[in-house]
Length: 238
Image 1 (cartoon, rainbow, N blue to C red):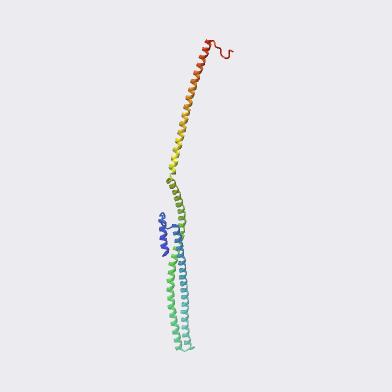
Image 2: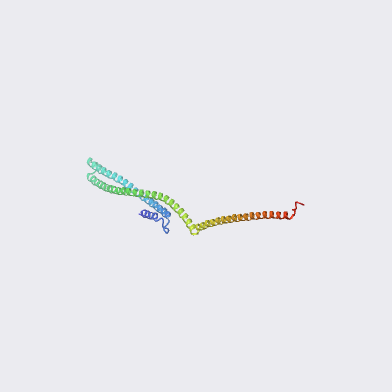
């Protein structure tokens, strides 16, 4: 049946979900479900028709059975009339014989209708099983479709994230960040080196100034001694 072939295709779609060049599994599953629903409508229509034929056969059985009994009663009534002398025995025998022939025809039709009804009832049982199978498959694949949609969303989100990560790596951003870290480390080390140099330069200047001040004090002291020896008075003596 068509729905079985579609189920097989849907199964293939799920198995090969990861293949890029395949048909869209969501669309395939949706189409498969639509096909199964079409099959269900067709099966329900056929089932209704077969049930109608079974009902018709049942009505025919009742109708033929009633006619069979009716012709049998008519034949008996004709023979009773002839027995009572109410009608000619020869005519009664002829009509009774015709009634019995009709009785047999209707009995045969009744047997045929019974056989037809049995076949129709067997078909109904089989078709109802098929309808139930289609309904179960529709329910199953509608649930599968919900799961498949969720899986596709997760897969798409994961794929998008991985693509972004791949682009980041391919563009060398990570390598650039590593180089920037190295550059900052170099700048920090350079700043520290300049600080050490500045501190070193300041210490040397301090030493020089200290030495200069010591010499100036000694020179001034010597100058005062010479002035005293020469009798030269400073500005304060005036």
